[in-house]
Length: 193
Ligand SMILES: [Zn+2]
Image (cartoon, rainbow, N blue to C red; front, side):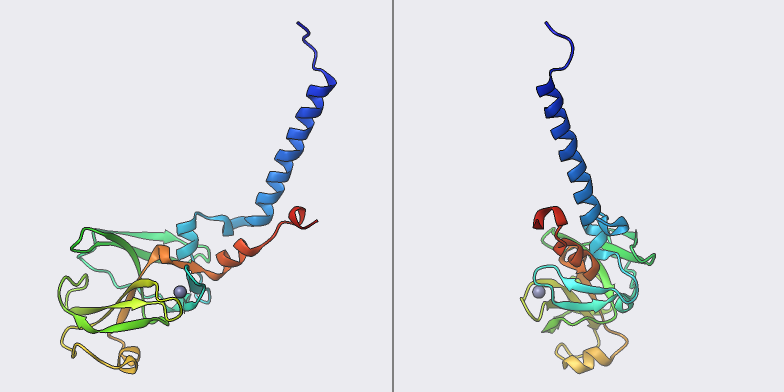
């Protein structure tokens, strides 16, 4: 059996090396620096002026400055995400009466559609009633809105928006940051030639 490598084998190895280099170049182009964080982190990672989008349709829902921490003792757990813009956001885990668990981020405001009447039962935030919040463009369920339980079950959108006692809890993995979305749209040069 011959021990030295045949020219054919060397050519194959060179081909493999070139393929690996192409892959590395591709990863560098698609994932520049911190933008290549894990999907969930990218969805929640934001600086104050970062735009948060509906993951299903890309509708602009809120900016980073709209995020507001509303800790609840009814959360199963809470974690503090390290974010792309250096800002940290509280992500809380809740469970609904059907046993479904949701990781949510709380917002002062967001461009969502609310579905009154509000319900006082099984609220994750004591003293607050909830309504379902959906995307105004694609109707995906994005989370819930909370208003004081002492309020009427149905209020106008402007009453809700103008009060500083109201907030939203949006499901973390149904959101996307704009910088992460644009990194998905980048086409490596090696694919366009
Ligand atoms: Zn949408």
